[in-house]
Length: 501
Image (cartoon, rainbow, N blue to C red; front, side, top):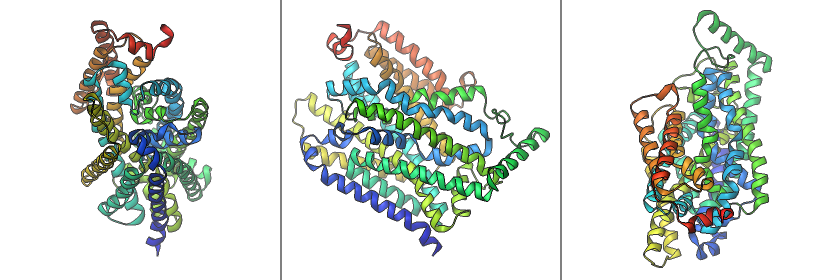
């Protein structure tokens, strides 16, 4: 009976998501007949402000936000909450910096993907193909982390095996994404974001209830911190530096990675191509900032407060939240609460999956057809889109059967790679008229080479996260390449910088 009560809410949630996917597919049949890729990959540029904000929040909030981040906060204390606080501005930065211009340019050049924008700006098919490959590789890496986290959580809360949990969880998210496309992703993301907030609230009640209220929880944390200061063993959870585990250099690196660097994430930037009008983006900036702030600070803070209930955990700190859910809640309440982190995981996977699919179908297949002046059969595009989306999901599921540990580091590596590849080409491409294809190519190839080699060799350049040095090098290479390369064509400049003519 307990197992049934744990599983039933999640199964109902899964059925609803699948139903939404098929309903949206049916409802979108006419628009997909006219232009399949535009409807399937950006929802026909029809998102309103609230849905835009929620899909951005749900995409940005991943399994790390609900499992790994709070788990590390449980271990390191308030220093990790300070570190996570920069995420509050993520939605505001993405929509505020690139939101309007990306939308305007997207409509001018009929862009469906971020790679479409890059190809139009730099007039370089080589750069576009490299960008598409980067998306496929790093999105697959990110999805791997999400699948592992979702399956681990579901397994811990229900008692099912990891493999069975992975199959059920992954099958649902791949199926509704494949069938429904971007509209299904956006609408289910909105539902997921709301459920995340509800799940966070339930967790807060449980932690404070079992920990003797806020005063009881803080008394335990204070005791742990005092012991650490006196004996030198353990972590001072109150100190901003967490006994040296949260250094100024790590703060700088992390703040770039999850703060200003989010401007370079294609899975969030594509949202800038999907909204309806200026009013929508303005309201999305407000909604998104409020929800991201509440969610990121809230979940990491709950991770710290969980120390008043859980004094030790088995295995990695990724299990803190799942242990709370499975061991400290009534089965039915656990079943309801687990939907929150599962929703965060599923919304991120669906966004990565649809964007990764577009990199193959729209940026490679359709573009190749267009350059050869061949007619694009919308029915064929539809079939290929469904197949590619499904195959990408299945391949990632297979990889997830042998999971590595500590999901947060997998996500951080993939996030860093995407930011290096897209941060300067998008930012400078949109706001620096002298940026050209040579500079962008130098930046992407050189920056990624430094980042991947340094990470693989375990090298920390200057003691910072490798994202810092790699981004600086990528910027220098961009400027050098733009100085020696051929200037952008006037036609391109008139499109991207009309005020200069």
